[in-house]
Length: 290
Image 1 (cartoon, helix red, strand yellow):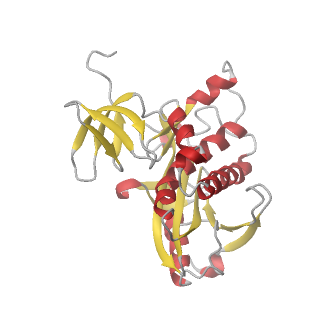
Image 2: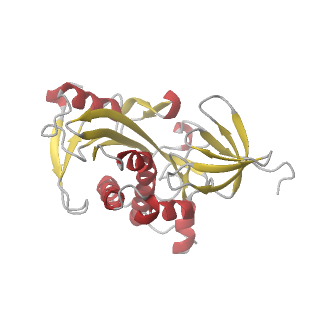
């Protein structure tokens, strides 16, 4: 995407009083890639890459999910956005970095619940229970994926570590347009916001609030509240799972808790307890169906 094609707007007010630079493009290959390219072409200069700069499009042609999986956003039916985060490169940075995709998921969950009209027949608490986080990077509605989140480290310059956090949300996809049978959209789930344009500002507001809480706690997710919040709404916990680790090993067991670093603790079938930092985790029904 050439620089002249990028329209820069200021998004202010909603995100915890922080003025954000919003870069809106009609189409992008991958919002993470485009924002990373801007950072690299400008040498990572803070003056040209303000913290929390966000690139957004409603037509993503070559998005990438975890492990290089394709994530395409049909024009006008999905929201794809990536936000630049700048962290002081100190001992707290790795702790904050590991939680960025997780707090992004929590922020998006809150934004969806805030803006979505109550579904017929659901009490507020029942409505909230429908939207969960699948560890480590999916937002689900009724157990189906409505959004995916992917972080990427860019590099360090002048004592600051820069990274991008991207999210793709299925907004008005219909059943025959879903990428997989395990996916859904806000429209299909009956949780389409009446004012769709407010979804991004609401998400950014929630994300900034959690990021600032993590900064103030020096990356301590327990103290910031992120650990407890995620533990309450993570669909992966308290379930039997099969975890495919980056090495290719498949770990079968029971997901018991999250570590303060955001890793998933699995009690394997041989009785060993392991903390998993990354991997594809699926819930598995017991053989007896219970």
